[in-house]
Image (cartoon, rainbow, N blue to C red; front, side, top):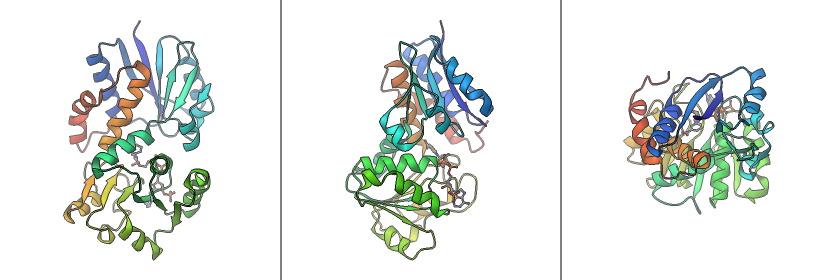
Amino acid sequence: MTRRVALLGRPLKRRHSVVMHNAAFEVAGIDARYELLEIEPDAVAGAVAEARGSDFLGLGVTAPYKRVVADLVDEVEPDAAAIGAVNNVVRASDGRLVGFNSDGPGFRVGVERAMGRSLDGAAVVVAGAGGAAHAVVHACLTAGAGRVVIVNRTLSSAHAIADRFAGIARGRLEVMAPDSSRVVAALADADLAVNATTVGMIDPGSTLDVAALSPSATVFDLVYVPAETPLLRAARVRGLRAANGSEMLIAQAAIAFERWTGVGGMDGVMRAAVAPLLADPHASA
Ligand code: NAP
């Protein structure tokens, strides 16, 4: 029987996950396929129920269903519950569905590679307060970051993250409006500046003033299409360490693959498989 993993979302324009997971299934010699399941909201509960079948290894979950799927599975792992989003589901041998989140650990792998050091003790500025920012802030706090500053256009969303993580933050988390004069000082002190908004991908421009950063800072942009956003270009022109979200994308996929199959170490296979798509500025379909 060919096993299945279906990615639930709407719209599903990108093929990056399909290419990475199907290459890994092939190299690992596993008879399984990863498929896109673009569905309407009223079909999500049925799709999750179907994944209890023995032909399923699990599910991938993307926008806008990361929260709703958390309410439909049998168990949500603590980190995913804390973040408030499930981006993958693994089917246990008895058919129970367990939701987990690989964005946080994937971010940590990608960003620590980019920084060339651990997040432990780091001062971080995060632009954004959406789904990805929740995973980023949670990863920074649990990895021992010394200070995390959230800067977001809609201040109430940033405060919602701060409230959610108050228990683990223990005074390390602050919220600032983008036009606050305190942002310049926070950037000057930062070891790491992260763009976790859609700016650079959907909207032009950039969210962080690279000129305010120290020469030893790293800039990490979660966006990976296009490969070089205006933010990353500015960081490189200043001679800063800078990386896009491709290593996070690969790391979170390899973490999910290991949960579904028990086979680890597929990041190299996935990196090679997805390289042509990452190099193609029009690779969205
Ligand atoms: P989301 O939940 O829709 O959140 C979007 C965020 O962007 C919000 O904070 C929003 O601010 C901000 N934003 C949007 N337009 C803006 C503008 N014109 N000016 C300033 N801020 C703006 O999206 P998400 O799921 O968090 O995804 C964010 C990014 O991360 C996307 O580019 C996504 O592709 C990327 N991502 C990458 C990976 C990876 O593996 N590399 C994984 C997950 C996500 P408001 O609150 O003010 O609306």
